[in-house]
Each structure stands twice: as C-alpha cells, then as structure tokens.
Length: 575
Image 1: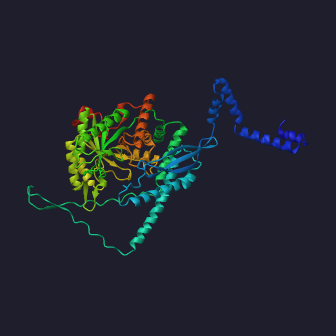
Image 2: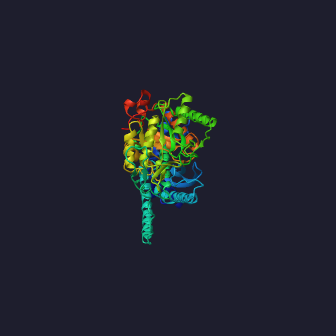
Image 3: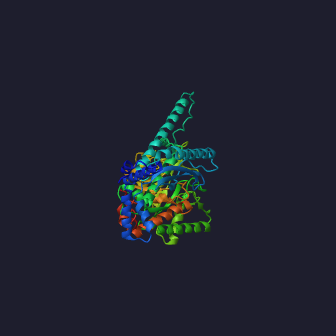
C-alpha cells in the first residue's frame, strides 16, 4: 500500500510520522526522476560481473562517467615575472567538478607592451605603462571575464573565445572613442608649425663612375605605417584563452597538442608531425656591443628528419665551438641574449657568418648541406626616419635599395643562408619585390605578422612568423594558420613566461612545419625544447609520428636545379 493510501486508512499518525513519510515520498520521487535506483542496480550488476580488486574504485569510475560535465566557476589572475624579470600575468581557471571547485589549469603568454633597457630614456615611462597593462589585465580576469565565463563548458573553446573577442572589441572601441576625442580636442588647439622635412637626399657620383658627373636624387621612403595600438589589459584575453584550452585538454584526458589538433580539424587526429626546431645561434642586433646592427638573429636550420634531441645536441656543440674560437682569438667574448643566443660584437655582417663557417668546419659539419642558416634582420627597428635610411651599422646608413644590394651580395657569398626574416620594413613594398626577384630563387623571404595578421601579403614572401601575444586567442591562431598562404613558423618573444611550455604543444597541435624557440640558454626556452622532445618521444611510442616525407612542408630553398641532393631533402617551395 502506498504512503498516500496509508494516510487515507490511518488518520491517527503523529505529525512527526506524517512529516517523515512525506519526506520519504519526496526522496523516492527524486531518486526515480533521476534514475538513481536503475543506475545503482546496473552498477552493482557490472561490479559483480567484473569482480575488480578495487571495488570502490570501480564504482567511483562508474559513477564519474555519469557525473555532470565540468563548468567554469571562476577565473583568477596573478602577477608573475617573465624571463626578463618584468611583471606579467598568469590566468587560472577553476571549475565545478562533481560538486567541488577545483583549480584545473593556469597559463601565461608573451606580452608585447614594450621592453626598454633600464638605461633608455623612456624606461621609467615604459615600466609604468607595463604596470598599467598588468593591473588592467588582472582587473579584467578577476571581475568581468570571470563573471562572463562562469557556468560555461571549458571544452567549448570556440564559444569561450568568442566571448573573449567580443569583450576585447568592446573595450577597444571604447579606447578608440577616447583617443579620437583627445585628437579632436588637440586639433582645435592653435596649430604649431611642423618641422621642415629633410631635403631629398642626393648621391654624388665618383670621378671614376661612368657617365657624366652629377647627382642622382634618391626616392623618398614611404611614410611609416601607424603602429597597431596595444590595448592595456589585452594580455588577459590570450592568457585566459590558453588556460581554457589547457583545461579542456585536462578534462578530456589528452595532451594539449591533441586537444588543439581536434579543435582545428574537428576530428581526432591519427597522425602528427613535430615541427622542425630552428635554433638561434648568434645575435648581432642593435643591443650587441659591436657596430653591426643588421643581424638580429642568425638561426640554424637543421635537415628535415632529425630528432629534436639531435638538433639540440648539434646546436650546443656548435655553440661551444664558437665560444672556443672567440675566447682563443682577439675577438671579444659573448654572452646570452634575450633570445637565448650568444650576443657578439662585430662590424660587418660577414664576420658572424665566417665564425659559424669556421666552427662548422672544425666540427666536420658541412655548412650548406648538413645545416643551413636563416637571418632575422628585424629591419623595421633599424630605420632612421630623420635620414630616411637603415642604420645597419654604426656610421653605416643604407637606403632601401642599397640594403637590397647588401642582401644580394651577402646571399651570393654565403649560399648557406636560405632565409631572411623581415629584411625590410613592410612599407618598402618595391624593395621587397626587387629583393625577391634578385634572390628569391635561392633564399626565402619571411615576414613576422604577429602585430598585423590581417595585413596584405608582401610580394615574394614565402612564409610567416606568428607568435601568441596579448589578445591572440587559440581560435585566432587556428583561423590565421588556416588562412595564410605559405608556411607558418611558430615563434617566441623576448618576454617568454618562465615555466610555461604550452607553445610547443600549440605548435604541434596547429600542425606547424617549423618552430622558432630561440637559443639554448635560459630555462624559459629549454623548458619548451624539453617539452618538444617529450612530445616527439610520446608520438613515436604510440606509433602516430608521421613519416619523414609527410612531416614538414619545405619552406627554405630555391630552384631544384640549383640544389644538391642533400639540401633538396630540406628545401622545397612553400607552394
């Protein structure tokens, strides 16, 4: 007889008994409505059938599968220090899992807020600006973003990134409106006479030149494109996006690279390749002690098919030999740079290349066969706008056309250099085309698009360098890499997080052909190299490491008839 029937038959129940039976009836309805008796019966049946050693562990696993999916409960931002000892942020994701709040993951990405030397005149202002960026990012994470993502499924990366993007765009438009009002107010002030621009530069012909004596007028350089504004707080967007991706991977019980690969292809990947590691050997840029400014990074390009550990071993041996040569000669010694490479002081671009050639010869490495080189010129940092020329070395100014001639002569003398990164400003489009026509058959031109991923492609560019900074989300990286023509190199910045190795997973998950992690100095970089080694070993053990011919789209190189058999193993058109 049901409880309700019992009540009708016996109205003499005490109030306590009435309340107790009413509670039991509600409990029964609750359990039946949630199928608890059926699931318990099924769990006990399975338990008896399997008779596991750990009875309660078996039951725990059984009911875990029936539990509600995790939901984001809150975000938390923390101040941390990056590899340069500067303030940055770390985003933490907390979720409700089986009725308990747990911290599932954290992430920190590179920031691009400006990194002045302590001795630079604007160091104090830049440091204050950076502190404002970090403070705003913390406020975004701990308050509005935490509330906006609360209750969301952390495995819905697209949905999370869309909310982050919408939030960032709203803040960007607010900031833009404030800037426009300030500019309009400034425009209403009395005008100040602008300084007289420098006259068109002339170049006198030497007496030995053919033709008549006279002067030729150099074409004025195109004006500088306005830099992309870095919105204070934008670092929060990229950090939260990466932290959510790591949370999704943890919930699914897979490594981050597999999770990102699934997000990109919308299906489980059955084969992976590990990007070829491009290792920075030397730095002769603006911060180096010598006169030379042009070679910001000289980068080792190994043969395709080498394991990451083999590449690192070779690069370390080469680095030690270069140090030995410098220490036993009259040349000054070297010290690690922000990029983790050796900083050397030279006067001419030939000198560091000769050093590498000598070290390779001593080690029995065939430069141009066993290894090739790429040069990151970072030319946009070298333009002296007051003179309209590139400051390639102290006292050595060159016009864009003269710089093209310099590259042409350098590549002709050192054919092992098969790639130039940012050899010119984006604005010097004519010279990009001229340089491509001159050396494009044997040397690839690459462009760093981190700050302007939507910019029109430059003529002759075969590939791009991309970094995850500021507001760049995981969904942005997936979209950008899918849209770009040619190969894409995943790169690092000088302000890498000290302990986050996620960049290696991101590069593998996105299917990058190459990854540029910098030099072999500094824990923040070796952490990423070590992670790359672990991924490669894991893929090999699982039998899902792609074969050599499928592994890497070749980016570096020239015409087939100009290549020997061995370089042809690593040099292929990006198309």
